[in-house]
Amino acid sequence: MIRRIPFESLYLAEHGWLRSRFHFSFAEYRNPDNVHFGVLRVMNDDVIAPGSGFDMHPHNDMEIVTYVISGELTHEDSMGHRETLGRGDVQYMSAGTGVLHSETNEGREPVHLIQTWIFPRARHLKPRYGSVRFSKTERENRWLRFAGPDGDDTPVQLHQDVNLYAAELSSGKTLTFETGEDRQLYVKVMEGDVIMNGIALGQGDAAEAAGETLRFVAAAYAHLLVVEMAKDRED
Image (cartoon, rainbow, N blue to C red):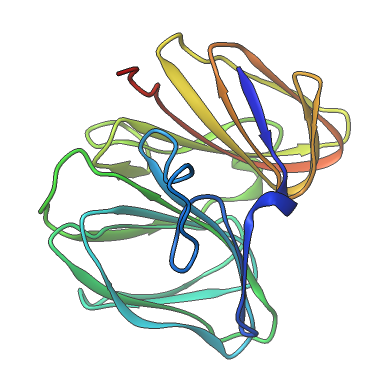
């Protein structure tokens, strides 16, 4: 099963300082038929203008992972963390019992990022924050598994049975992804375009997939994000 999700079909939130596409119901976008995919609750494709951003605001009971595509994102939170992240860097936060944070663009160029929210396996956990800086070679023409379940050996550990991968494919390169019978994927094309099992996915497009081996072929270039998780239970 593969379902293509065109970028143009995603809800557009345009606020001047922020241009965002919501993959699932979020903020002012309410769609009871598009609330989540498995444990993936939110995926927002955000572009933040220079000198702006999200002021200090609260979160709780959610695993939040931010992948910076371009520009520089500055994070600050109520746990005492403050840092600036660039291309390919990953920021993660287990909001747990509650945390305040801000995300701002203090640079001169727009910041482009993908932020995902994942349901935790339990509520009221102790909040935690971290970040990891990756080099391009770690994801160049191969899968970089940068997040996984807590207790695993991934750089980012989340309170959920979920794995996140990134890859940058150069022209003509191919990658495959094996999907277990009880697992499913949400694929996001962050940059470029790719052919996935014969289906063309352009920049910003996404796809849901389950129950088959996926083959990705880059025409000129592709920068991919994959969220892999247990398949939804059938009631």
